[in-house]
Length: 425
Image (cartoon, rainbow, N blue to C red; front, side):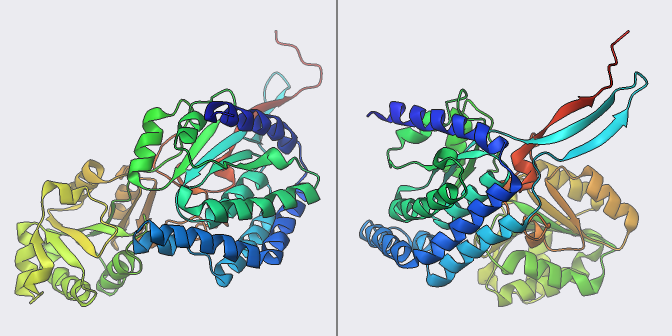
């Protein structure tokens, strides 16, 4: 069978399964999730063996250490995967929720009902646990899923898929509700993103190159984010006790995440007061600072090691480093900070440190990003931290979902009307 026929068959089966899932009870979906968790625990050795096969192939191909780390499944990771399924089972079911019901002068009542999107295609790299997470989130939100993992995780993904199918069968739900693409042929992705008759939305999770390709080729809506160039702005009225801890956490807790701060802006009125301490803290973490002339002068004066200082280029204001590097700029005031962020940000997450209520509210209103924070680390931009329980990814789009995408982000709303024999006059 050729790739196009294979992918169309997956799409056709997913569309049929999506109808059954849209009508499935919360109890059936939760049963499937709990049974998947049981299957993952029961087949732990099989999962570890499959993962070892992927790791051996990855090392033989000379893949970089960071990718091998993401690819690795440990016993602890397998248990976390099972617990994640149980946690999603415990979340409220968004499907069928009716809100905003209002009676109109005609006598009818008009409201909205939350409904599944239909069929979701998810394209991801390296991390096998995404197979279980994505399957669970799509299932709980009433959507059928077609999952296409990276070739480096083929054996692991297929082993997890077996557990997913076992859970679906145990709950009496169609096994085609979650299908994991079995081919590593890249053409499969091209077909998946160009089947609007079968697929309602695509969620790419991976590097910038993958997401740019999907966005360019897709003929169905894409929920995506390309970069995480997140900013922290130190306002002229920042609390000195909050400045260094927020910057330290936002930049140094983890370097390789999309909600890590990559740019630091400091108001000129307090730059001399705060930048030396910030610079010494960043230097203690061996973070390279790429700064404007004013910031570099203050950092040198504070005794920051010359090897950690570098003049910023225009590209540095835009870059997502995913590394111990941060761009630093002294700005005149709040106005310049907002203008800079809206010019260079990727629209992911921005934070202001300030005790001025008016400045905080202006920052919240005028900064055009998916998450905007006052006196908190950008690292909080996460589905779990926001109380969503889990997330399929983070969107920097403005339609349909924005920010962390959890169960509600995998649904839509339709208008519903309750009448009692009313007719329009």
